[in-house]
Length: 191
Image 1 (cartoon, rainbow, N blue to C red):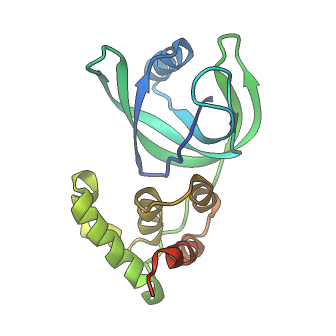
Image 2: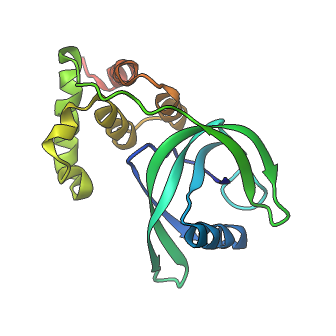
């Protein structure tokens, strides 16, 4: 799978907009379009988004391109949606600098309701979604009682460090993710 290391974390069901200008990523977008396939998004652990291939985190998210457009500066813009999470088993750098990885997909999470003790997280997400608008505000009401969905959306929207976001992505239990979010939120509380 082609890998796109970024200085951000993509979550299942989450949105991703990218400005594509490096030839290796233009080729990747062509390949994904031609093969109706996706590419992997991994948090950068070392290096940068441009230039020499960066060292990616071992767990990432499949991104599927849902839209293409030309940006005002003439570059290619894409919108992608987060899909399944995966673990990178091995990586190699292609001759053009594109990072490719052999991946193993992580199992889908069980559909669990938000437990009562984490109900405030769902309420917080509803308030943030109203302000954020767009797809967040148009989400079906049932999503706000889905522990995975609530956890992933809060992980996207809260002002967290990327290492915290990566930990939330790695966590495979939706209730444990809500517990972690509660711990992270404590630093935002005022006396």
